Image 1 (tube, one colour):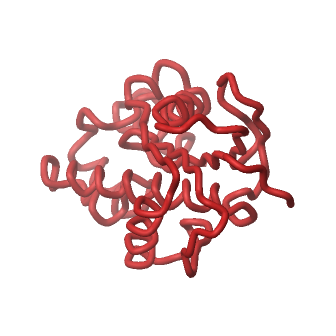
Image 2 (cartoon, rainbow, N blue to C red):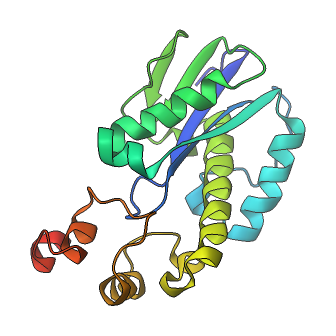
Length: 199
């Protein structure tokens, strides 16, 4: 796959969790960036992600991270909120991209030539780099939030609906960072039966 000069890779992190914002990153890498082990953020461990994130920020021609809030997720839906976060990241770049390639099926509404690439986070280095920055930024936010709401264990599950997390949600009810449009949270609020919410 031929990569255009000035290519901006874009990816998001946090579409699946039931709590916390959704993050996105946009990255323009130089052709000869040296980032050993660069891959989709889901395929590298937390220590490797942090090391890669440092290298990406140091070597990128431009990079930016942005998010859409829980309120925006509930107002617009998670897909539209993810695209909004991507748009914000692209528009925050200090260098104008020649083209935007986005992981997945959809592209945000920006004034640059854009294309969606399914599995792009494993195929295109700039998208892999964006996935790393989005994931590390969101994880850091969830660790920060965990200190404010220690009863939920956000530092461990990062807002995903693990059994531990669902048990804490059932015991304590949702706090302000929960996505109230998501079924398990509606169930915890008594708005939807739990079995229906989970399956």
